[in-house]
Length: 114
Image 1 (cartoon, rainbow, N blue to C red):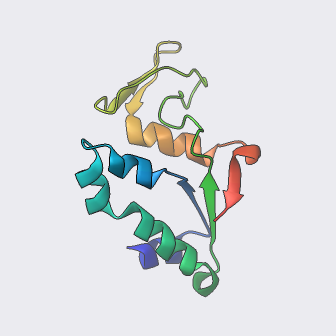
Image 2: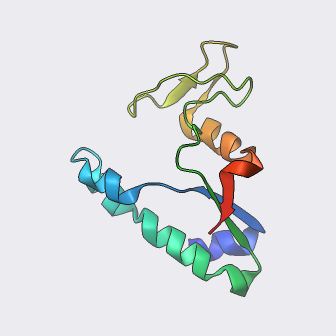
Protein backbone atom coordinates (compact mmCIF):
# COMPACT_ATOMS: atom_id res chain seq x y z
CA UNK A 1 0.00 0.00 0.00
CA UNK A 2 2.72 2.52 0.91
CA UNK A 3 4.64 1.72 -2.25
CA UNK A 4 1.55 2.36 -4.36
CA UNK A 5 0.92 5.68 -2.59
CA UNK A 6 4.56 6.69 -2.98
CA UNK A 7 4.53 5.90 -6.70
CA UNK A 8 1.37 7.92 -7.35
CA UNK A 9 1.92 11.07 -5.28
CA UNK A 10 4.73 13.61 -5.24
CA UNK A 11 3.58 15.10 -1.91
CA UNK A 12 1.98 13.00 0.81
CA UNK A 13 0.42 14.95 3.66
CA UNK A 14 -0.60 13.08 6.80
CA UNK A 15 -1.66 13.98 10.31
CA UNK A 16 0.88 13.82 13.11
CA UNK A 17 -1.27 11.62 15.34
CA UNK A 18 -0.55 10.86 19.00
CA UNK A 19 -0.52 7.08 18.55
CA UNK A 20 0.60 6.33 22.13
CA UNK A 21 -2.29 8.40 23.49
CA UNK A 22 -4.76 6.67 21.19
CA UNK A 23 -3.54 3.23 22.24
CA UNK A 24 -3.94 4.14 25.92
CA UNK A 25 -7.66 4.77 25.25
CA UNK A 26 -9.29 1.35 25.73
CA UNK A 27 -12.03 2.11 23.20
CA UNK A 28 -9.53 2.98 20.44
CA UNK A 29 -6.61 0.68 21.27
CA UNK A 30 -7.68 -2.30 19.19
CA UNK A 31 -8.63 -0.28 16.10
CA UNK A 32 -5.45 1.82 16.22
CA UNK A 33 -3.20 -1.19 16.73
CA UNK A 34 -4.86 -3.12 13.90
CA UNK A 35 -4.43 -0.22 11.45
CA UNK A 36 -0.68 0.16 12.06
CA UNK A 37 -0.70 3.97 11.75
CA UNK A 38 2.88 4.36 12.95
CA UNK A 39 4.16 1.68 10.57
CA UNK A 40 2.46 3.32 7.59
CA UNK A 41 4.07 6.65 8.49
CA UNK A 42 7.46 4.98 8.97
CA UNK A 43 7.28 3.26 5.58
CA UNK A 44 6.15 6.40 3.74
CA UNK A 45 9.03 8.35 5.29
CA UNK A 46 11.52 5.58 4.50
CA UNK A 47 10.44 5.46 0.83
CA UNK A 48 10.79 9.22 0.23
CA UNK A 49 14.22 9.07 -1.44
CA UNK A 50 13.36 6.02 -3.55
CA UNK A 51 10.24 7.54 -5.13
CA UNK A 52 11.18 11.25 -4.92
CA UNK A 53 8.20 11.98 -2.70
CA UNK A 54 7.88 14.47 0.13
CA UNK A 55 6.02 13.38 3.27
CA UNK A 56 4.57 16.28 5.22
CA UNK A 57 3.12 16.15 8.72
CA UNK A 58 0.25 18.40 9.74
CA UNK A 59 0.32 19.54 13.36
CA UNK A 60 -1.62 17.17 15.63
CA UNK A 61 -3.66 20.05 17.05
CA UNK A 62 -4.89 21.22 13.63
CA UNK A 63 -8.70 20.65 13.69
CA UNK A 64 -8.92 18.78 10.37
CA UNK A 65 -12.01 16.75 11.33
CA UNK A 66 -13.81 19.51 13.22
CA UNK A 67 -13.39 22.31 10.67
CA UNK A 68 -15.68 22.87 7.70
CA UNK A 69 -13.73 22.60 4.45
CA UNK A 70 -16.05 25.17 2.82
CA UNK A 71 -16.33 28.02 5.34
CA UNK A 72 -13.73 27.21 8.03
CA UNK A 73 -16.26 26.97 10.86
CA UNK A 74 -15.00 24.80 13.74
CA UNK A 75 -17.48 22.75 15.75
CA UNK A 76 -17.16 19.92 18.28
CA UNK A 77 -17.66 16.37 17.01
CA UNK A 78 -17.60 12.98 18.67
CA UNK A 79 -15.56 10.14 17.17
CA UNK A 80 -18.77 8.25 16.38
CA UNK A 81 -20.05 11.01 14.07
CA UNK A 82 -19.10 9.96 10.53
CA UNK A 83 -20.77 12.80 8.61
CA UNK A 84 -19.69 16.43 8.97
CA UNK A 85 -22.74 18.69 9.03
CA UNK A 86 -21.64 22.33 9.25
CA UNK A 87 -23.71 24.40 11.63
CA UNK A 88 -22.63 27.58 9.83
CA UNK A 89 -22.96 27.07 6.06
CA UNK A 90 -24.89 23.77 5.93
CA UNK A 91 -22.13 21.80 4.17
CA UNK A 92 -22.73 18.05 4.54
CA UNK A 93 -19.78 15.80 3.78
CA UNK A 94 -18.21 12.52 4.86
CA UNK A 95 -16.04 13.24 7.92
CA UNK A 96 -12.88 11.71 6.42
CA UNK A 97 -13.40 13.46 3.09
CA UNK A 98 -13.84 16.78 4.89
CA UNK A 99 -10.66 16.16 6.92
CA UNK A 100 -8.66 15.26 3.79
CA UNK A 101 -9.64 18.54 2.10
CA UNK A 102 -8.62 20.40 5.26
CA UNK A 103 -5.27 18.59 5.36
CA UNK A 104 -4.65 19.46 1.72
CA UNK A 105 -5.40 23.13 2.46
CA UNK A 106 -3.64 23.30 5.84
CA UNK A 107 -1.71 26.55 6.45
CA UNK A 108 2.06 26.28 5.98
CA UNK A 109 2.76 27.16 9.62
CA UNK A 110 0.98 23.91 10.61
CA UNK A 111 3.07 21.71 8.28
CA UNK A 112 6.54 20.22 8.70
CA UNK A 113 8.55 17.57 6.89
CA UNK A 114 8.44 14.02 8.23
